Length: 137
Ligand code: ZN
Image 1 (cartoon, rainbow, N blue to C red):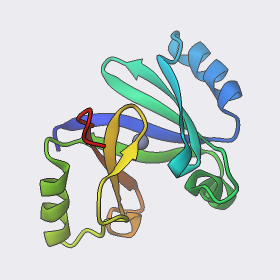
Image 2 (tube, rainbow, N blue to C red; image 1 turned 30 degrees about the vertical axis):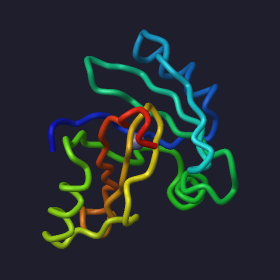
Image 3 (tube, rainbow, N blue to C red; image 1 turned 180 degrees about the horizontal axis):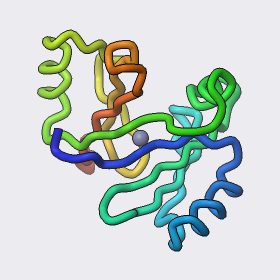
């Protein structure tokens, strides 16, 4: 893993939480983005190069809606930047980690992402992410 890229936090109301985190961090989110394929609306705050990603569900069947239903709002995932996501996926599969999808998916903030199953990571949802190359999905 290259670095901790961002920390994802599941929230019920993005506008409300944007105001809360703006007050807490003393800065505005640098972007708000819909990720329709994941059923989420996100916003990002940059805190010294590590980002806080707030995630609000936009559909009842969104993973964030399910997470909040089961566990309430709060810490949702840790995302680590990797150089070559396919290589890291292969490596971690070989180490016995279970990936939640066979292929990297387009995520928010111009990233390709994949999640590891939290059962093998002390129940912490871990995301691998890499910058998306424009023109390559
Ligand atoms: Zn994320």
